[in-house]
Length: 248
Ligand SMILES: Nc1ncnc2c1ncn2[C@@H]1O[C@H](COP(=O)(O)OP(=O)(O)O)[C@@H](O)[C@H]1O
Ligand SMILES: [Mg+2]
Image (cartoon, rainbow, N blue to C red; front, side, top):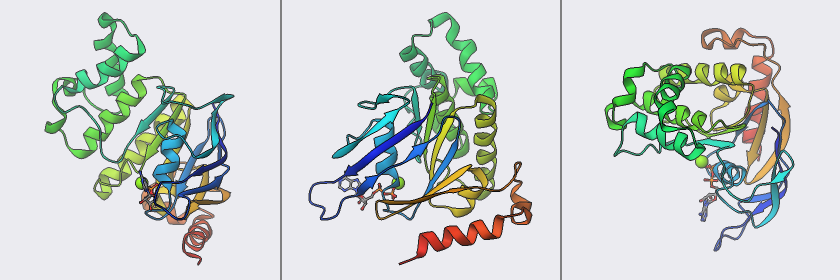
C-alpha cells in the first residue's frame, strides 16, 4: 500500500515557524523509504501524522486511497523507546495486538511463537517480562507486536538509536529481511546517514520541517556493514547526504 501526504503543514501553538511546512511526501507500495534529518527537524512529527497519531494543521495524509484520520493496525508503528506494557509478559504484549485484531484465543499461542520466530527470538521468550530482556530483544518484541497487527505499512521512528553499534547492525539486517520477505511498505526515520544508506531504496532528507528531493539509493543488496564503503556509489551517496543535511 502506498502512503503519501498532500501539502501537509503542522503548527504547534506558541511556535513562530511551522514544524512541518507544506510537505508532499510519497512512499510507493512496497518501497523502503528512509527519512533522514537532524534532531528537531520534524521527523517524528511527520511520522506521527503518517500514523494518524497527530492531526495536521492543514493538508492530508492518504493511505492507498483513504484519508488518514486515526491510527490503525494497518499502519504499524515502532518507536525509539519500546512501548511494551511492563506489567505483562511478552506473550501478553503480543496477545494484546492479536486480541485487537480478533484472533481467537485458541490460536494466539501458536501465532505468538510464529511472530517471535520471525523476529529471531526463541519461543521461551514469550513467558518473560519485558524488564528481563535486553534493549535489542525488547525492540524485537516491539516489532513482533507491530507485525501481529498484520500491517500494510510499517512506520519506524529511530527504533535502533538507543542500541549498541553491533546490536543495531543486527536489527538493521532483521528489518531488511522482514521487508524483503513480507513485501510491505516501510517508512523508517533516522538521523544516521549510514543507517539510511544501509536500509533504503529511497532517501528523503528533512530540514527544518521541509523536504528535499527524493534520492534513489543506487547500492546493490546485500549491503554487509564491513564492506558497505566498497559498494559502487557509496561515497558519492554519503557525500550527497551530508551536503544536503549540512547546507546552510
Ligand atoms: N507537541 C509539541 N508541541 C510543541 N512543539 C513540538 C511538539 N512536538 C514537537 N515539537 C517541536 O517540533 C520540532 C520538531 O520535533 P520532532 O518532530 O520531534 O523532530 P525530530 O523527530 O526530527 O527530532 C522541535 O522543535 C520540537 O520541539
Ligand atoms: Mg524524533
